[in-house]
Length: 381
Ligand SMILES: Nc1ncnc2c1ncn2[C@@H]1O[C@H](COP(=O)(O)OP(=O)(O)OP(=O)(O)O)[C@@H](O)[C@H]1O
Image (cartoon, rainbow, N blue to C red; front, side):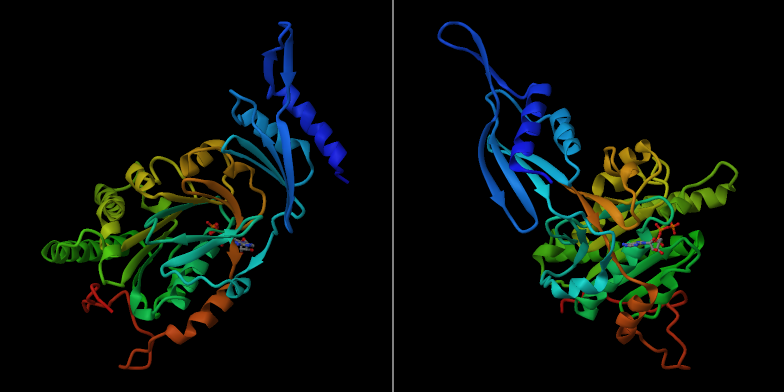
């Protein structure tokens, strides 16, 4: 068990080893040193926090942080702020499973907001009106598709139906997103490169129309207008959109167009109400175009196989060290480790059943792939 005494002794050794000390000469000219001054202990339900004053001229370094985190067999977080060093030692580990159902207890009253996952302290939420675009990376079977399904389910369940429009691009052959095709919120589902190009042509012409309406009305950003509709373009397995040397020229051009159109959504679509969620198994410069990465200010990464892939996905190492399916690093300005809520296909379908629309012609489900009518995306609600 970690007693106060063992804790303080260990910290003292770490401060000395990492040279986190203040050196000075006393009035006789002798070299002296003082350790960071211990200020207080905050005992909370989930953790105990120790606070120190940082010695003059010293900063929290990576090596100090690693030394502290590695010194305890409990989960430990270190941060510095306002000349203070905070060392937080948690009582529990992050759970390996968080059920989507548990989220019902948490009241999220902001629109276009979805849960990303639980940290040791709280639930992390992502507001698509604050950060419009997101990239999602992760090796096979680590939780990307489950995350996208819980995102779709949560958006549909927690926003007025008419405010959410979904363009779903499922490059795993339509197996995953096909189940959402007949939702009222779904405009179209694409399941191969050809359909994706068609879908994106439709999105681009919509964006162009909306752009001229915005110009006429003097609007610069949808969040400052009465327009309540947001259009989500969600891509699962975007690596399928990068071309290979053996492909025919025509296919390469089609894939090139798709990547360009997705980049355009992140470049100009955000202000018009378009939100891109771009998921890929293999984050490389080919599969994750630079413009998409730069314009997506939120990056979520499940376990990746190499440190290099982690650097491409979240700009730093760490995703290669994740071990549990559903465990991810969510990076905006800050970086946190989360356990993403789990939802099964069955639960997602049951929750969304009430949003399904039935084709009046013959009782069959509404065919979004062959749909040609023109929705007006500028519903002012
Ligand atoms: N949030 C989660 N919590 C707990 N387990 C999860 C979570 N997400 C995924 N899993 C487990 O991992 C499995 C694979 O998840 P998922 O289908 O999302 O993988 P993926 O990353 O999309 O893989 P691939 O790219 O190979 O399709 C799930 O069937 C489930 O058992």
